[in-house]
Image (cartoon, rainbow, N blue to C red; front, side, top):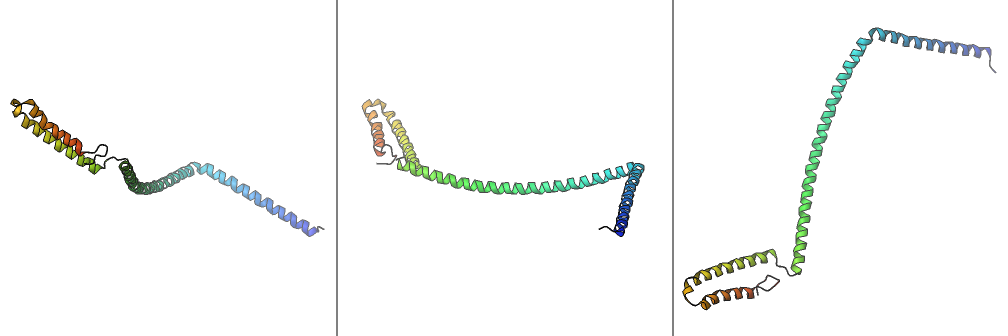
Length: 168
């Protein structure tokens, strides 16, 4: 049951709330009136403060960006170095496997091929020397000059087994 004291207490609280709301309203109107009077000065001050804040944040952002770029460049260099090392290893493995496969198929190794090239070059040089030696002897019979070069070519064919590049 509501008593008379409770009703009076409730009425006083309502009056206090009304007074408080009225004061808040008046404070807002006063701030609005003051802003109208000093609005341009306050606006200019806010713009100046905002420009200063923007400059500070822009500098901080640029510093952070520069640091991030430096870190990313370091990561890129490190990644590139690691990738190049791994690529080199992969390349070596591939070359070894291809070399073994070619060897199994009977192809000469690079060393054997180089030795064969050297032998062919030596034989060609020997044939040229034999040809020059035979040139002055042209006055002699043609059968003799033709025989001196033919045995050297036949010997070269016999020393290399066909398909392997290895000497017989």
